[in-house]
Image (tube, rainbow, N blue to C red; front, side, top):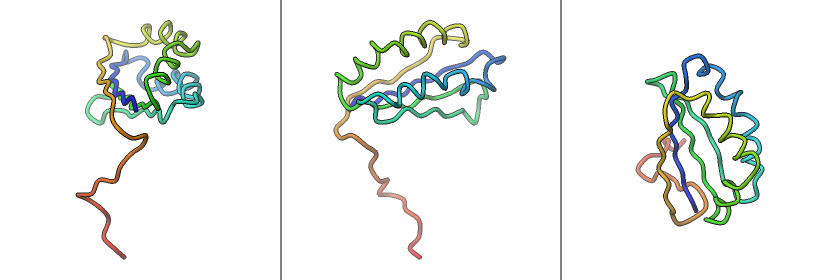
Length: 109
């Protein structure tokens, strides 16, 4: 799978409604056949920073995402809302899902 983590620093005037502003992009991406997940989180240290964790089944699904109209629209819209160039980690990893963290689990009942 293609696993991507991107960090966005949003202009302060858009940080509180960032998730609403990216909601169409998020919904459309989640509907893509090759998308495994597309999840936003807000930093607990910087209220203007959001982290996007996304995964695609394979390189073909990643390429289809980048070629989609909703991706192209986001590339036109989002630069107006950010305070700097997003940072990204993009790697190919085996599998198509999350694995349990074997070092930690809740106590047995």
